[in-house]
Length: 106
Image (cartoon, rainbow, N blue to C red; front, side):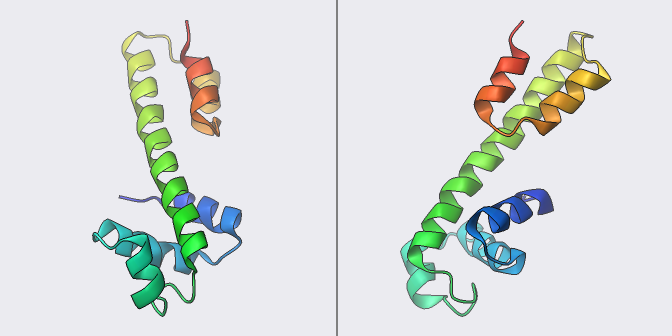
């Protein structure tokens, strides 16, 4: 499952339209490889090249892992009864895994 915030973030980073990112993500999630999409599904992604698709794939994996880790951190802190609104906001806005882990340290 991909959120619109991930689609929007990748689109902004690659300077492409969100619809192009969404189409590429659907193809990748369907099992298509980057070379296959670049060569045979260029019309579906409205012309994304193999370099853009590779960057999109790498960022997609990273952002999904970040989102999963963010939820695990929030759950863990909430179970400990130490989750404050300020901490939750900081965790939700952490842009990298490193910053997220820094917030999670005791």
